[in-house]
Length: 241
Image 1 (tube, rainbow, N blue to C red):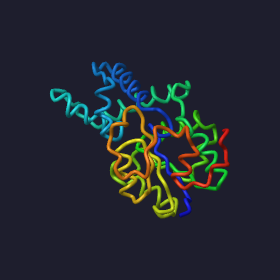
Image 2 (cartoon, one colour):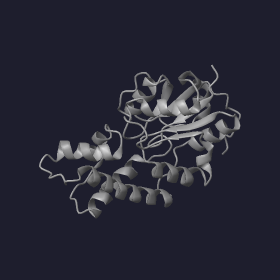
Image 3 (tube, rainbow, N blue to C red):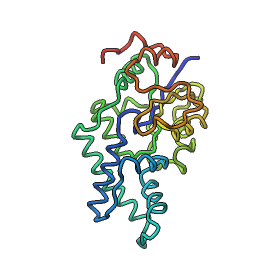
């Protein structure tokens, strides 16, 4: 089977972003005079909900039953999330969120080999653009044939909508692609779209259930092993990037 495209998740997959998101949420809460604090244990539970705005709503509805919702509740959540995004992108621009091991090398090797690159994520377009520019270079958005992110589909992961959207625009079948994910929700999303999926775990997701994954890795520091298991003909390319 010839792999024509690699579809990447972003948060936790391209870079170790999740704790930075948590810190940015807390800064947004403080800036809006809310006495909310998401510690690591709570955020681990909240990550079961995909999407930042959805995560805020879930927190309010499950942890703050007495919270008086503003008349424009959706607007309140949207504005709060915008403040959070500002703090998060500042952290990215300051170089505080590194790319994960092996990611730059994999992307460089895939480009050399003519394999199409794409992104399927629930994070915002601003977050994706800033992370790519900071982590891969000023023109790196152009390396990806399709970038699917944010609220462009009706249902976020674990629904397969974002992967269907990306596949449609790539004009490729699921069997032509592989996906890289870091979470159970992401895995469910890509598998539901019929895509063979490899998981790169992080501290927040390592205890999740990855049944159905083609393989699970701590990271991609051993790219040769990943290439071999994934069936990618990339072993001689871009290892030193």
